[in-house]
Image (tube, rainbow, N blue to C red; front, side, top):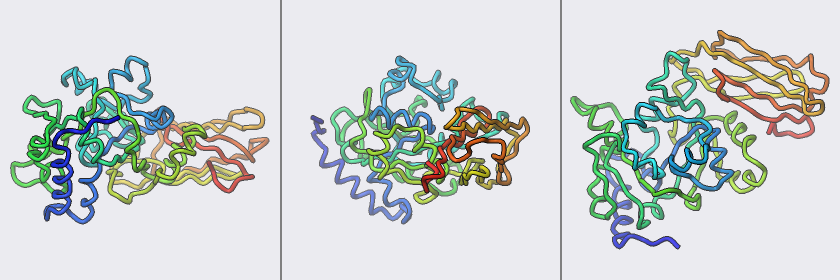
Length: 331
């Protein structure tokens, strides 16, 4: 049974007050009632299998980090105690997500951190914020000036106008705003998914990939809250990724996000596994640019009526799904 903070009602009242603030845009008014966590799609699949978000120390102990999206430099310069907490954000599209989201050529990655296929978990804020053990930070936990508290008074003191700031920076405000945009909600050890309201992918293709990666039991449990697309402004969508996959007995066609950022070069690989025979067919390119749709013809396959296709960019999974001609859905 969850024990509530003594001043839980004050926290709930402040959430409602924030929703009515004039500095929130119409598109942001749903933010105060929710909390956000993003991770790579391979990690997201593991979370949905397990039914729990674990802190970094527990993940490291069990060697359960499939794709490490954290910068070694940032991890080493952040107090070790925060490894023992699950960390959520008050807002989507944080500065960290801006720095690591999307498939980036190797020479364009910052601080050796990379989240090629982000999935966003959206939680109902009230039950988490009012839990007795929940902490809050007013900004980036890595910074020496960060303040952390657990009371209603501390929560109401948080500078939400800066935390939710989502427009151009004013003169001299950039460093301060970026610090506060990183404000976090900090939960010891683990967080069950009882407050999870939405699981969001960037595209239909990445939705299909997540759906493919989780077992049937998890699909049955979570499928109703898994969404896809740009609605909700949860992603920056600045770099290449697979937006659409068309699978048939004749060919595989992958369409990519069109972005002003460099579309390559990548080392691209496709593997098509024939279900009936377990035969594997491959294609690769060491100088691939994700500009125009990629078409892979399947004329060499003996049984193209059922197969699993996997697509990788620089060895990171970008798309995976099963095609079965007897089913209308590609997954």
